[in-house]
Length: 204
Ligand SMILES: [Zn+2]
Image 1 (spheres, rainbow, N blue to C red):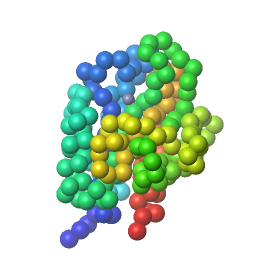
Image 2 (cartoon, rainbow, N blue to C red):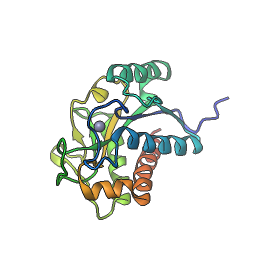
Image 3 (spheres, rainbow, N blue to C red):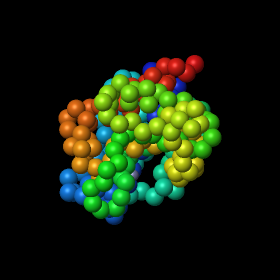
Image 4 (cartoon, rainbow, N blue to C red):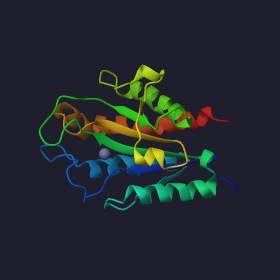
């Protein structure tokens, strides 16, 4: 008997690993791999408790290669059917490579061209607008929707719709304060959980 809430398998990817160089706030308080894993764990836990088949793509703490990440995702797609799988990859943005920088805000990326991933990104953006009221939300409206399009490996090489979220800037002082705050963490988790659930509810 199928007791799951929907036909979808939700793959949660958390960027990088403890052995990734850089990818931290200039003061060392925020490590991207660790932060992404904490958010991913909360998103995963909430989706599972809501009855969804959510899975962590990289339960390890070391940096699992992008090739291996894509292989794992495509293995799930081969079993479940790629139209029944969605992948969300959780990251924090960076404008530079050392000192504090000025760029701020939340954004989401899809692969180039219009795919199901753009629809998922639209739902994530809609929820981000609710959760991050008063904060910067970075949009690229040049192709008629808010997400940014990039040839990121995890987006290009996975056969299911995939979205990569850049959750504020790890090298902006105000963003790091928000990222590490209780309300910031809760809003980032809620953006992912509600965005994913709203997308799934809108599918047949
Ligand atoms: Zn990253």
